[in-house]
Image (cartoon, rainbow, N blue to C red; front, side, top):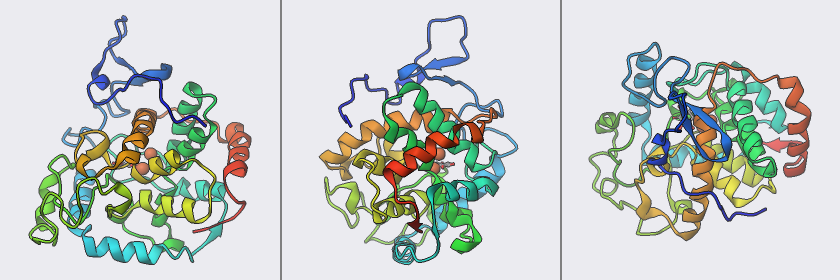
Length: 305
Ligand SMILES: O[C@H]1[C@H](O)[C@@H](O)[C@H](O)[C@@H](O)[C@@H]1O
Ligand SMILES: [Fe+2]
Ligand SMILES: [Fe+2]
């Protein structure tokens, strides 16, 4: 696997790069993927203030999330779910379990999660046909949402989905609906409310406690079950919801050199994760054999969850 990226960097600025074509409703990204300018509800992606049928649910989600995700809460959840003693199942079985869940934090999608997994993976596969590890990363990146399931304690949505952020240091204003952090117990705690808090310059994201949810959990599952996926895949899984970093450049002072390298892949991944969300469904049975072969290549048949 090669981790050197030849494509030009396309951070926030490139997102607004219009193609000089007659279709002004499209943005050009790398690799040929054409991202729609609007989501299925007719709004720009990740517009948390646009009046839409999802806006209220999403805002209420972030209110609960920001109030409850504290340093103490995250430490407790990491310890509890790190035991991986709840279920034994394969990756594909987990994909199927996600069929019943709709993510309340997402202004852009109200389809069952399995659609989103396949849409992401298939969009990547078109543009990066040789990076099979990245296709599989697309398929599994949101599997941690299985924490919503009764056999995982049916955690509330605020403890499973939504953007993530470090706890143990000041919340950055680039976080969606930042105002709700005021009621987080850490907000006024001098141990946790300074720029560095309990961390130090360049300490590396691996040493940072992120708000608890599907990213960190799926990272743990993959790592502890000894996946052979490359480290960039694990990084993508673990930080794909960390929009304040990969979209807004916040919290960069906590990264080390390895994080900087991995972030390049995460930025590529994010375009597919975000802009492939649509009402166009993938034929599951048609693509299933391909993904089963990847699962077999990179994971044991049964995993501890
Ligand atoms: O609402 C979305 C959620 O659907 C994603 O799974 C997560 O990764 C995002 O960061 C979040 O904001
Ligand atoms: Fe996610
Ligand atoms: Fe996703």
